[in-house]
Image 1 (cartoon, rainbow over the protein chains, first blue to last red):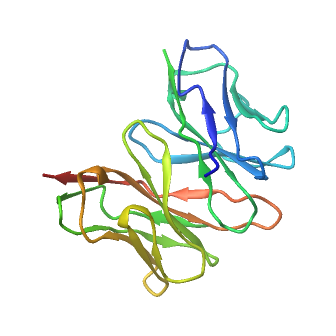
Image 2 (cartoon, rainbow over the protein chains, first blue to last red):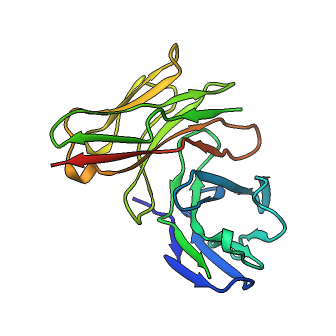
Length: 114
Length: 116
């Protein structure tokens, strides 16, 4: 069964550093998403991406965050200057079309900011 | 706007006994509903989904859920718990939006413990 692949599985970074989290969505999917889960808290929506632009974003997704689909296969989340509170599990997801067949999630990247 | 309530933050059952994880939702439109499971230090795995077909949905690992519109519920059940079922379970509601992708709204999660 097709999978969404996320790399790395775990990243440790110093506060203030830039990080890029990488995702390879399923090849025929059109919509892409990032979610995060702070330890012990709910899974929260960050951003959705369609047709090479952001379609929706939450208030969490401030100017420190950006997304990109640089080459038609990868989908990246960049955090420009990490803060301690950015430590979380970040999940990438993709879906084939806009009719509620459900997302396929990656296994997540655990980001630890020290 | 849609929302999801999972009534129990923690459920504990004995191995071999039934599992019931409760979920209620609110939605302005006809929603799609999902259950995801997250094992420790793992990603989110889809257990089952309801997308306006049969109201009783069967998923993987013996789980099933019934969509009850009158009760706005989508409870997850399994007849007999196994030790490997111990995990966090998330109920999720989704509404499609014209011309855009969807986003999911996650419930807060229910931690299932299975006792030997």
